[in-house]
Amino acid sequence: MEQKKYIPALRFKWLTPLYDFLINITMPEKKIKEALIESAHISPGAKVLDFGCGTATLTIMVKEICPEAKVTGIDVDAKILDKAIEKVKEKKVDIFLLDYDGKQLPFQHNAFNRTISCLVFHHLDTATKQKALAEIFRVLNEDGQFYIADFGRSKSWVQRTLFNLIRGLDGFKPTDANAKGLLPELISGTGFKNVEIKKRFKTMFGEVQIICAAKK
Ligand SMILES: C[S@@+](CC[C@H](N)C(=O)[O-])C[C@H]1O[C@@H](n2cnc3c(N)ncnc32)[C@H](O)[C@@H]1O
Image (cartoon, protein in one colour):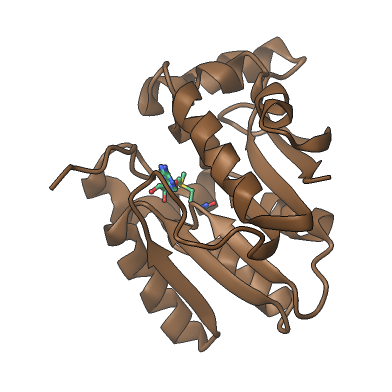
């Protein structure tokens, strides 16, 4: 069987158990995730996909903030999903979690109203980013919208310099388009409309931007 190729949450699989603790103490995680959910204007009954859900922190927050939404989390890493399943059980929330091959999302066309994604795209090289964006576009319905939080090019040289810490950890190739500020262009290139950077957060690892995009 072909081995899945992906960069785990903290680059090395053995660091995955520390992910929640480390992201919480080093990043304004709650602020970023709350802003992402708020930007997405999720209505009751909306079908929401969390792409690259990791330990499901954001996925659970969506369900807690919008209890009537139908929330699905997907990730390529089955090991991190074990942790996500544990957290979902603890919180007693109704969320569907699944892993996939990292290529084709196992959903029909037009299956979701919203796709959200936090800190995933800097793990994907440019060709993989484009393929993932095309899949996200495909599974969103006609009125669907995409909201992403990830590292982007900052106007501040300090923030640009700090991003090298993440680049050193996760690799210079997957983070290249983020460092060059090309994420909005890649999103538009897939067919998304009204692509816009909504918010910027300065962090100790560089600037995280919330980008929104609509299918039509
Ligand atoms: C830094 S973690 C972010 C996790 C979570 N979204 C959060 O904000 O806490 C990046 C996640 O992206 C996942 N990932 C990497 N490549 C992926 C791909 N091709 N498709 C979906 N998820 C992927 C990793 O397994 C990891 O869980």
